[in-house]
Each structure stands twice: as structure tokens, then as C-alpha cells.
Image (cartoon, rainbow over all chains, first blue to last red; front, side):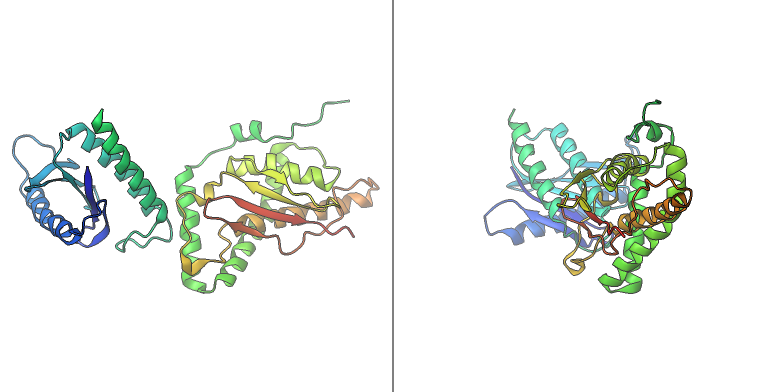
Length: 143
Length: 191
């Protein structure tokens, strides 16, 4: 169950933040997202020497907390996507697939000539596409 | 009698040079954004887009007539069909449909279901009233004005069936809805 997704710009400014739970611990989720930015910076600045290529976009599981798992994805323009999900048997392939579709939606939103790069994404279409992707993530992992 | 020249732009479209659709969309978006930044008034931008389209249209019409080999249209209905099917197909790669004819047959709507100019575009609230695709309306206006000039010449040579003795109403309505459909309203005023 996806709890929260976030898009963070290359200066660590938030571009899009959406939670998918009714619980009122939204602040806690934002805090988790914020912490995960540090983990991403660490990963980016100290690439593991085990043969991972330099242009790896999918960062994988960033860190597990007591209730949530946090996955990261880094685009070539240093924009970060962060996915917070509750403990389930989440397959790696599903998360990669999710990020791929999310990246595609993000690119379409950013291609809008009225979107200012560096400002928040206010596109309704983007929000709808994201909720569709989030819903189908839950379904596909149940198979 | 030779069969009439085909009224669709498919054959021509297959032979013309192409450009990447996303480059085209992004370039047009950049133009509109820059006009908004420079002129600030939505009405001014609409007028400017129309003028730009007009300048394109007066040049485009020759290319269209030579490459497409379309025979003369006998009335306005045929003209609208040719614009919708052959003209748009040749230059944008999509066809429009002609609907909403009024009682006299002098005014119709061209509807573009799938408009490459508006991919990815969402108008913000500050720009309501912007006719995003107004350049297309200017192009049609420019192109049709040039053919009228041509068919007036023809009238001198006593081929009395002109395309149409018309002037296009100066305010074809062209707007872009959030779903990306475009409509243009053409009206002729027979003199």
C-alpha cells in the first residue's frame, strides 16, 4: 500500500507531495521523505564500488523504518522521486515499473509550457495520472 | 472526364518532409509563453498569434495548392472539407471534422479532436480567455484570403464559378479547451 510519493527538485526543494492515506500523520510522512533525501545524497556521493554504473536511476530501498519502506529514484536532471510504502511483499520489479510510469507522467507534466521549472507541479492531469498509477501498483502486486 | 483529384491529404502527407512532433509542440509552447511574457495581456497575445498565423497562411497557400493538386472547389462547403481533410492532414498530420453548418451554408465549425499543438498543455487560471491555437485561425484566414484574390483574377477570365466570392469573417472563434479539442468557426459573407 503506497502511503506517500514525493518529487523533490535538484536543490532539495519539494515539487510535488501527495499522501494516499487518511491518517493525519502527514507530517510524519513529510519528515520521512525529508530524511530520505540525506540517504540519497549519501548514495549519490559515495557510489558503491561493486560495479554499479554511474547512470543508475533506480536507487532501490533507501531505508526501512518501523512501519514503512522508502524507495528512491533519481532522474538524470537530479530530480528525485521518493516512494513511501507500508510493509508488504513489495517486489523490486513492481517498484521499478512504478517509477518508470511515474517518470513518464512527470515528463509530460514538465513539458507543459506553462509549468515553471523549479516551481511546484500544479497540473491536475498529473495528479490524476499519479493516482491511477498508485492504484494499479496495489493491484499488480496482489497478483 | 478525368476522375476528380483526391480530396484527402494522405498521399501528400506520406511524401512531405516530417519533423518531430514533440519538437513542434514544445516550440509552439515556447512561442506562446514568450508572447505572454512580452505582451502580458491575453487579448494582445491572441491578436499577435492571429497575425503570425496570417503571415504563415499567405505563404502556405501556394505550397498547399502546388503539392496537393486539389481541383477547384465549387462552393464554400467543399472549401471547408478540403481545409479539414487535405489541409490539416498535410501540415499537421491530423484531420478535422466539419460540423455545425448554419442554415445558409455560410458558416461551419472545424473540430480538431487530436491537435498536436496542445499536447501536454494545461492552461493556468491566469490565462483563461487565451486562444491557445489562434495561430491556426490566422493561417486559415491568410490562406483563404489569398485564394479569393486568385479567384477574383479568374473572374476576369470569365470562368464564372469562383471558389467563393467571400471575405472571411474577421473573428473566427478559435479556442483550446482543456481536453485539447480545437474549434474554429468559419463564416463567409457573399458579396
